[in-house]
Length: 301
Ligand code: ATP
Ligand code: MG
Image (cartoon, rainbow, N blue to C red):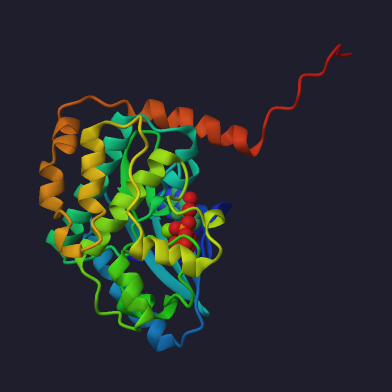
């Protein structure tokens, strides 16, 4: 059973990435609301077919911490990818509301469990862990999306510039400059987890571009500077957790099993956390950022 464009009713844009837009759609035959990602690629039919076939393994990526995949198809030179709609969107747009430590720990536990599932069950390394690829919904679920399953798609998207917000581990940044792409291991994702947790806690990317003269200086800070730490209001246990991820030497970084056994995540498992309450408050904060209420008219009619 495959999805095609004729079955979909298109609604508003949910967001925009480097390679295209994500729209809210309705799959008419099943009445399921979905998110449809459009990826513009200048590729021939054979390569587009290879991508659609490689994406098929996503049907096996079924876990509570993974955004569900519904199917993919292509039209002309665009790949369309349909997935579970997450009604609160990605964490990058909610984190500015401020995140209490218990919610941060729950987000982290979900991310680490999701990554361990991908690695152990599907032998997949995510390769793009960052707040825009962690999605939440008003049921309080936290799920990962956009992991690297298709070699052909990865190749076609090959980033010509690594942008002003790099979540790449130091060894990858070094490898990149030596044109060496073989240095990617699962521990590179562990670095990205640490950086992502700190970004969500601070509300902004931990190596803010405006503090550096240029992208080179910023990447130098990642490779040669001290790794960032959680802000002071967070517990020592939480700080210890992020420091176990943000080791410059990949061999010193914790494994997923070690992270899940870390006191910060063990204590999370024993707690009730009102993620939905936080999501609802953060969405209200986000709404006010975009359309602040007009000043009350003095006097009135
Ligand atoms: P980049 O292109 O640099 O990786 P990105 O992850 O933001 O950045 P996309 O993956 O194209 O780019 O996603 C664009 C935006 O669409 C995301 O930031 C997110 O807010 C929103 N989005 C993506 N998938 C979903 C989904 N399944 N449900 C709801 N919103 C989504
Ligand atoms: Mg994304």
